[in-house]
Length: 261
Length: 276
Image 1: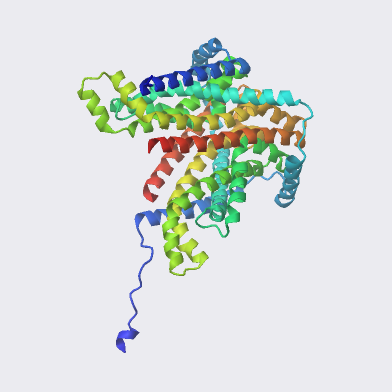
Image 2: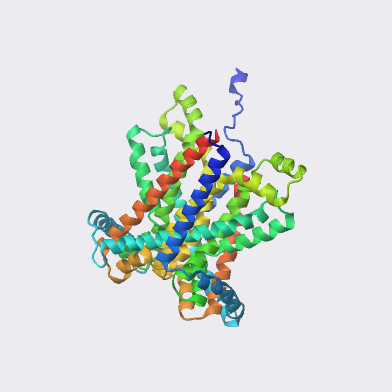
């Protein structure tokens, strides 16, 4: 009997979705998630929000203090993304197939980067709390490690993509290793690197809110404070301020990306 | 002789194009912001050098001497399963919602004003950090898995709508036109052309989101009472101050996240091959 490719594909699709449905049901059981509660909670949450989750006059009076905390968080996100990317580029140069000084460098750098990015930022924050306590350093290093791991991964790929041909050409002219890196590889990778740094800044601001709740710093701490004291109108202003900041930074980085790429 | 004394015109290796200027300005801006940022850090009396040394010692303890104390191995696996379950559930829910809304967000499938409405809405949803969504729903349904699932689903849907819509927009316009010309209905074009030709892109975006949701689920356990391994890590760190137990949890999440990443890389390679 000849197998019908369409029937085979259909059968595979059915098996895939059946398996997925089974796993989803299993996940509901193990997490104690109730579909009914979930569906009824959504309208309840939004009805509650229209009455209680709006900034009132007292909340607007707190705006300068909230903006102060927001600035602290944004600056920390920018600093961690920038420093981590600079260091990440150097390590990526050591690890990429085209630019590594010795084949032995590749595996350790990639493994190191993998460890750094696969431990979640919240886990890093919980680990770093032991050494840096409730200072800005905890959040800075947590974001720094994750960004570093991510940048090394993407820059290794970028260097191998854009660098191979030009590196070979320059090597044939007898250019030194450092000259090849500084004159060819880095200029060719910079636009991509900047694009990734901007992406990480956006990601880091959202992560910084989370880390702030854990470590008691920045805008995350402000939200947590108002939220736990049930001052929901001030908490809603914090959310509003974060949304505006994220959207503005997204717009700014899209603008820079268009100019750079 | 006079010819030699004339200065030769210097060749500009890197001309001042708009792109080059933008790169220089962006790098300068980032550097200045970073330097300024360091002066504003709230150090709370922590000395950087000492704390850094302390950190290295802690890493050693964490990585070389992990052990469990307050939970058993079985409980660790159960907690990990809860976290994976949260990630899976929110990815599946998010993907289902995102698939239908992304059809309205794609420029080649829906009218312009509908695109803008959906895209504007999802940009707002994505701008709110996941943890704030979860805490927002926690007011209505209490801290727990319901709030966590709802909050994470919201953010996942926002992310996937954008990703799916971009995948839909990459579809060959000729295919859509041919189907429309032959009199196919809108739903027929979706299921006969759009879904088959973007299936592998949708699958890989969904998997990327599953990886993100797994780590978000850890974070929600630690900050928003979603349970799972994140909660255990929070207890080990803030309540028991037990670095060695935290190390065991760290190894557990690291192993799972690395397995996911390995799987994703291999899946991508296989999907890429089947396209050739």
